[in-house]
Image (cartoon, rainbow, N blue to C red; front, top):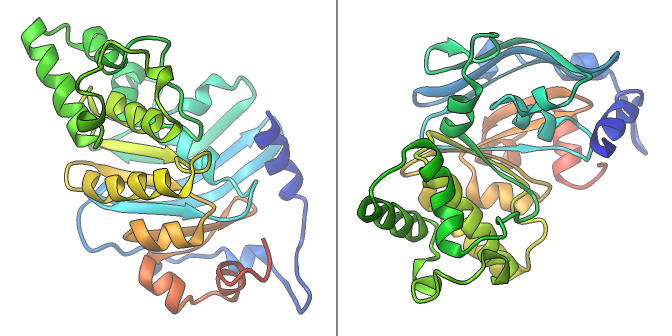
Amino acid sequence: MNDQNEEKENNKKTVNDNESSFDIDKESIVSTSDLVIDGTPHIEIKGLNLRYGSAQAIYDVSVPIEKNSVTAFIGPSGCGKSTLLRCLNRMNDLIPICNYDGQIIYDGEDINQSSTDLVRLRRKIGMVFQKPNPFPKSIFDNVAYGVQLHYNPSRRKMNEIVENSLIKAALWEEVSDRLHELGTSLSGGQQQRLCIARTISVEPDIILMDEPCSALDPIATAKIENLILELKEHFTVVIVTHSMSQAQRVSDYTAFMFLGRLIEFGKTEKIFDRPEKELTERYITGRFG
């Protein structure tokens, strides 16, 4: 609930820094001509609004997410980027006071419809959280758990899936001789890669990552970032990050959010080298945030 309270409080603020103030509603106008991607959209957010009770946290946000790309959402704490990420597989439904409108188009259908199969949706659009959260099970069972639940394969097929998932998560060489050990016995970086392997194992289309490196040291962070670049060959990745340098290193597209609004969206290189909005430029250069 702290994130929700922070978003509510931040939405009451005016945009103000040492030199000037901004009309946030004018700054957040992004025309359809600004929402251009090179390839096919894998998931599209259209006119999304979200409220916690009567407090609005997301205002009329539209964003296309390109298939087999990495899209990074940046912005100060409480701007709504993690809330937006959780909309993509309806995890906000677990919050009783949360309500939303607008469309999220995936696989040709609006996932916000009441008829959406949420179990299938969350299998196809998986989530990796800020803090590694392996199950109190063996390394093998951590990866196999979701597979058993959804597919119930033969033992031989299960072994193959677990191995392939750990290989894709760049963890197999480090744990192949100790799959019986608890997943919680691994280092923080290894635990996060185990969680990624667990997500991969059920064959998702899209992987959501909510600040996946915030609890990791620089070496572990570098491994996760290299992994993200490899994952986009097979999956579409959407990441929330507070690190401007991380967004530059791993993403193809960047969306800058502030006070629940989308301020600017485009190719990452353009956003960081030639931002069109002054508010974007001030944020990425550290002049506020």
